[in-house]
Image (tube, rainbow, N blue to C red; front, side):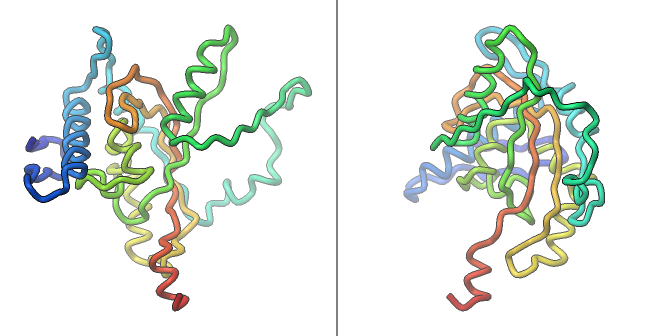
Length: 224
């Protein structure tokens, strides 16, 4: 399918080619296209229930924050005084699961939302491209960031002026593939698909976007 987006933050995708043995990439491109369509439409329907995306996207975009690599607030995290006195009754559970980021977020959401007591926010680390918002999700590439971008409202926030500082920084200096300790924080991202592209009941996560080391560039630098 070919989708000519009206969104100012989206690049128009090219028509899916046939007979080139790249059906999977074309399918992922089509999933990205339909994701942009529902974001542009401002709502998504699942199980006959319509979910408002427009207000969520506006909120996420307005509250997106860029943290430069030497941000003083973040650098002093270890010595900061907590805003609330920790309760001795609070405990932490650590789980190591061999599942995708989206599957993990969904598992955590379902587990927490089934409880009678309130719970905090779910945070996701987007191990991201340093130079391209959403990585290659518009062209059908597949990695963690691309799956998140295809499945949620994250991409518009990465195209805001605030978030673009992250990409401008790395396009000026890629630090031989190691990149900077800069981050983008995007609150209330709505996830409405799974990794396979299937529509799911929407849920919200906060996303921290931070650049992954470019192993290829590092190997070239080190001569390995």
